[in-house]
Image (tube, rainbow, N blue to C red; front, side, top):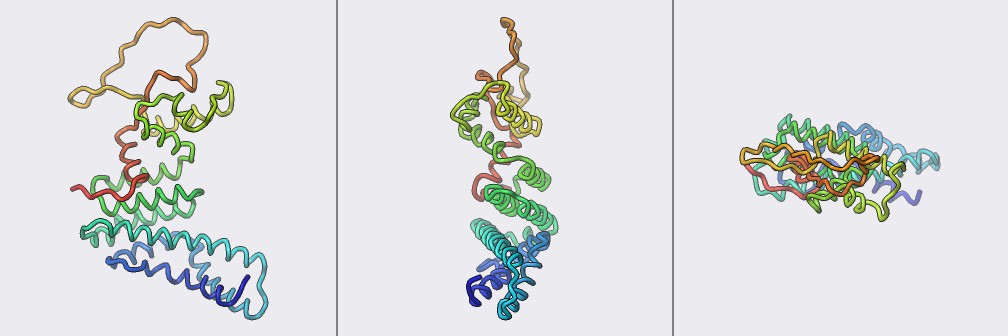
Length: 269
């Protein structure tokens, strides 16, 4: 612990959260309050600010308590930055969003998102969540049910899943072999744990409705069946890193990327 002034500064960080500096929307106060209401340690941190200040003056700082306070200070600063980022993103759109920001439908999305924010194990996931809830406020393209689904995808998938998604975004029609080479410099054996993990990730994203093998459609948008071709028999199973079948994002997958991995999108009615 350094000095009394720093302790007071740390305490004020918590109180400053609810201000959401400079927002033109009163609804942003409700958004911030709803976000903090689902993060259980926020109230404890604010109370701890008063307690630790008093104990510091009496020379009774417990080292474990001090470490807890420091850890949560870092988290509260991150929460403060992301709430301000959310406010700034929303204000980019020159539209009247007051009703949307104060609606229970949107605030329920905020609560769900910030529960996920608190449990997220990477900064990247927290950024996806802030982008998602920002776009949920500013766009009517995506139904709230889809926003909830995208939130669940962020919860469920790991960094390697997002690396696969990004590889497909960057090169539509990419094969599994080249998806892998976007992740690693070398191709492992088919019976390796890396190959098993890669097959699992592709299966997760395929069955989850995020990616699929590229399909041809007719003018009505119906998928055309692939014609089967006779081929010479093989005594080995298809490789995890197969190099002839291209992959693409599903329509839902494209919308997920648009809402979470891009900046705030324009509202389309």
